[in-house]
Structures are given as structure tokens and as C-alpha cells.
Image (tube, rainbow, N blue to C red; front, side, top):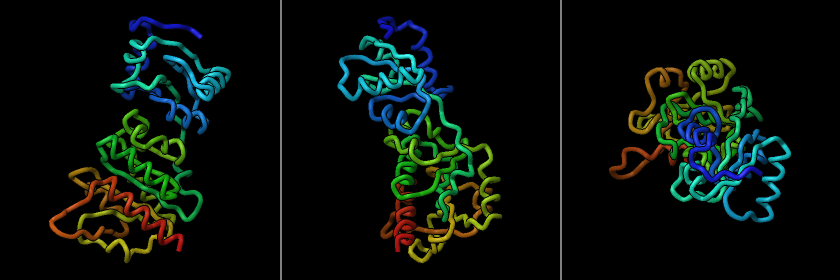
Length: 259
């Protein structure tokens, strides 16, 4: 294991580039690193600081055998490598997986969460976490959505991104049109005027389409929808947070499908 005590070491630039979303996935903390390894991601670089527990030592040893470079770094170097205020002893770099869009549809009946223009990484990660927990078959987002593999979104997803197919697409509208042609219903969530959530059949193959914070869905996304759905609200509340709305819709789908 190579020791690094200088904040000017070349790997510092690699980790800072990853934190900006340039190339590799940045994994901060033992929880994310463990989940990424369990999901089979190719971990390339691991930097550790401080003593290791038995489980952590076993994990790091296994990653080293599988080809990861492992470095022991000082506390100051770890702080330079990690984008968080209080690093938890390990940061790592991994290759993002290649996920074919087709995998989002299996097993049938498909239940895909699609996001257009979700700009907050915390919301993007929370939506993926809800999708995984509710049994969705996959998540599709466009390129204006926060990178689901960015470190902030990964932390918000609590590692769920490793356990459900997630695709960030340059052409999400084309994907939705293709799925419609294959008899998968695209339902757009709108704040008012749609079918009330409990009156909508969510047992069929379905894409639940969510818009960004504030502006909602753009016209081209609304145009591709087969139907519209609205979550009933009382009082003066006009809309829910997009991550909360996605969770409500997905769990209604789960309730209907369990029935």
C-alpha cells in the first residue's frame, strides 16, 4: 500500500475532477464503497485514512486483488480528496456502469420513473432511492437533470443507484416515443387537471414522467404523454417537492400492483 502525505500528489487532481463530474464516479464513505463493490462496479482507486475495521480491511483487500490501486493517505490529504466537510475515512474512484435502456423495462410489467430537468442532485438521488424501494424497474433522466452518478446524488440515493438500472439519456423523448410504440403508457405528472392518482390504472406497463423543480415538464415532454396524473392536495398547497411527488406516485403503483 502506497502512502501519500502531500496534497500536491497527482491523485488529488483526479479526485477533484471526479467531484466536478469529470469522468469517474467519486465514492465517499464506506457505505457507498461497499454498495458499489457489491454491485460489481469497477473500483479503480481507493484512498484510506486511519485504522480499518475487520470488514473494511477485507473489502479493501478484495478491491486490491481485483485491480484497484490502494493508497494510505494522511488526514489532510483525505480532506483534499473528499468533497464533504467531514470525510469518513475512505474515498474511491470507480467506472460508471454501462446500462442499456432496454434493461429499464424488465421484469414486466415495466414501471419506469423518468425525470426531465431535475436540477437538484438531492432530489435526483432521492427519486432514485424511492424508485428502488418501490420496486420500479428503472430510472430514465435527461442530460439537464443532475448527474445521477455525481457524488451529491449518490449520497442522497444512499447507494440505491447501484441497485436499479439508471440511464441518463441525450434523447429521452425518443426513448419515450419508442416505448409508447411498444404499448407502454407514458403518464405525465402535472400539478392540476390530471386524473387523480387513485383513479389511474398503474398496474399496466407504465412510465411515470416528472418535471423539474419550478418549471415542471417542458412542452415536448408533455406532448409525448398518453395521460396526465395529479396528486390531490388540500389547502393552499400548489405542488409537492418533486422527490416527494415521485415517491407518492411510485408507491401508489406498488399498492395497486400488490393488489
